[in-house]
Image 1 (tube, rainbow, N blue to C red):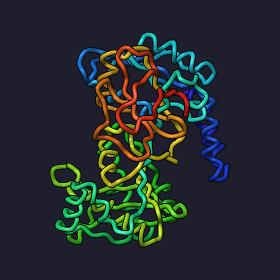
Image 2 (cartoon, rainbow, N blue to C red):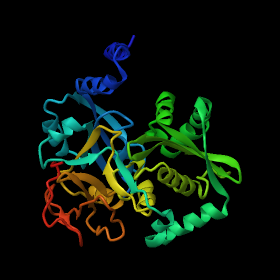
Image 3 (spheres, one colour):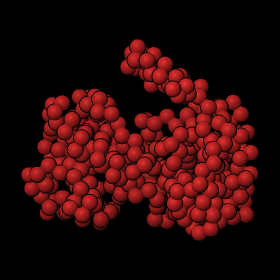
Image 4 (tube, rainbow, N blue to C red):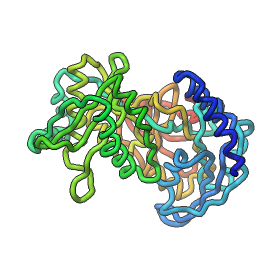
Length: 378
């Protein structure tokens, strides 16, 4: 018997006795009582050469930045686990012998880390859209969005509401789960069927059809004046790639649904915390803004001691959105100017300097905050 699983099994039994509203806080407290696994990763990096990263936290939650940093699967050497007490001290010590340190921790823990010693990167960020009176007005400042609208119209896309638990179950098994697993691979976090059904009861299910054939679907829920995309999926094209126009059709019709329901905002769900993320890039041209993701309670604490070529290369390809002065800022590589990557909801833009200590970042172009950031200040 695996004795390490006994506390988890006991906690699972206890949580079933609690009301639904108390279960998430219970699991947060339970998680805070457990030490974080720590490991040293070593291997070839995407910019060439080799690099070292120390990670604290469980897979797959902590695997995003290692996946951006290493060129393949790195060698992993387990280290001594670390509890909350002394976590900042341990991470600072580990940073001395690595290119980068990354810890996936509860936001409560992250808020109490040494101010200025870490970059507080949200695990996921939200992309929000104010519902326009006329959806076609969104294409005025994005010509490629106008092309997407024509693709939706010319390729026979339409939408209709779904109904009943049977529809939601079919959506879950044939659209949602396969799409999440295909797009995110080992980083996929699949919601449970019961969670998707609960969301559909508070909102609805929208089928996306092409020439009358079901090719996609979206489960959404209502939060007062806000409509939230909770789960979406689609049947891929014959070559296995995303079906051309299906994402645009889903977005187009969910905005129209929100407008018909009297909603003023649409929450398009979580994105990776980088302005270079493909999903966030696509959402940016719709005029969405970066906002707090209410579906996650974790941050990444990120730290480096020196801007090594491996660290500079990571930031050149994967600019990071981090917490700054109660909002969000973005940090890029040595030569980043964010000229083509600015997005509403990002209050300041910075780049690293090869010779500067951690936290001494340089403002980038217009819209700068006018001062140096304090990375740990959220």
